Image 1 (cartoon, rainbow, N blue to C red):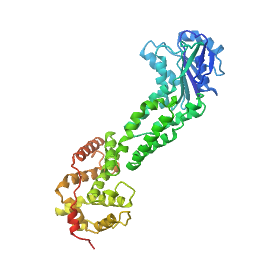
Image 2: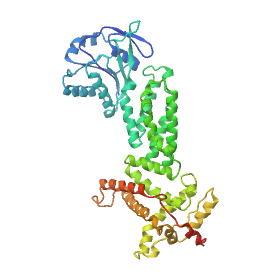
Image 3: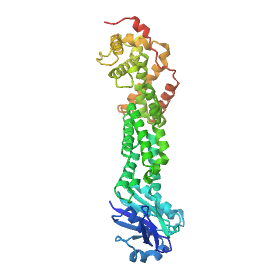
Length: 464
């Protein structure tokens, strides 16, 4: 890994000028690139490349060797004269060839002519991804702008150059809930602020970024592992951490790109903040996943979501979506009931032996709600056919039961990765269309999704 300075020179040598760095030091030189080196890499660089057209080489070649003030002399790199689009692509490739994987790049665009500065900025952004290089700094010496003392400002444009990276990172967060790219950028900002690179004044160093980076990663992990409750917690803490960072680090130029993109970051996490726990939060996450075409997690959650709706119909809504152990046991119990619906229907049609259906074993559990705990214990003692009949035989449930069975079958195929199946049986495109159909059907169902004949169960008394 090397620290590399890249700059372009025009066809006319610049006169010496005085430049004021962002920390108010004045450097007199005819080489604004030397100011870039002092500002971004005060401890020195490993290599320097001067991009020169034929005309620029005639004007600068000798000066770059005899007058260059740093120990590391620039290596001249011939570039075309930007007369055509092909020339621009050649320059783009040439800049890329100056950088090796993992390099740290400093780019000065003071003396670049025509469109070379823009091409150079885009090339460095491209290199950052392809070669995993890091942009240490982008600088411009505004030699034509002078204050009363005749000093020109040397402008640190690094944050502006990184806006493309921030935009791509926010796009990844928006599209897939992937916050690790944003977290990595935040880590780079912190490293740049506190490592001494750029001699950043202490009052401009961002000090509230650690929690923001942590919550971005927590939110990503919750999405990746399909933990809707953890996603809601991370979303709330992310929102608070973002507001704190922007409020307290208002003077840090390094987080200005994040300030511009802050509304979109908050918008991505907002659905999880506004939803109440339980079925409502699950619904918010389902919509969020479907909007981003995250088919596998969407279908997996939809499958479990229907069991939660059945649990609500049985009267256990108060223990769902929280930390009550009873809520988890009720969910598993309802999932087993839904899994047995087809067998129950086959028995009713004479297509299956009644002995084929068995009640799940009694689940021992605990709860702060003694009444619901006693109710769950009582319901578990009913025969499976009785329990199933209390909702399968209800006419209003037929559409949701049909959808539940379709989802269960497709979800099993999806979770098994298509292994053991004819590869041509269900293509990826067919799966996508199926899931889109399930989403439309789910949204069209009247609420509540399930109706349970509780009076029928209560009328049977307490089973032995």
